[in-house]
Length: 123
Figure (cartoon, rainbow, N blue to C red):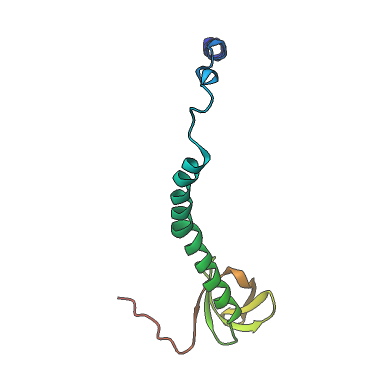
């Protein structure tokens, strides 16, 4: 109960204090050009470090998914490894074991291993 009164008291004290920012003289703030010059490098950094690499990864993934063909070995986001049996517009049919076939959504494929690629050894 006392924590509730303490919280209400702090809120009341914060609301009762005069706002110091209201008394700023006109024209004392930075102009628009200064603000743009400050934020432009931040926007460029975000673009080149976050947005552009994500777009490139998405483009590579989309290209990889569109090039899936019958006989490829794929790994899904759920960890299943299987051989592609049938490819349709949005789905892929995988053989994951003898007489076991599953259908997955194409976008859930995270890696495609073609028949010609060697399998890494378990060292």
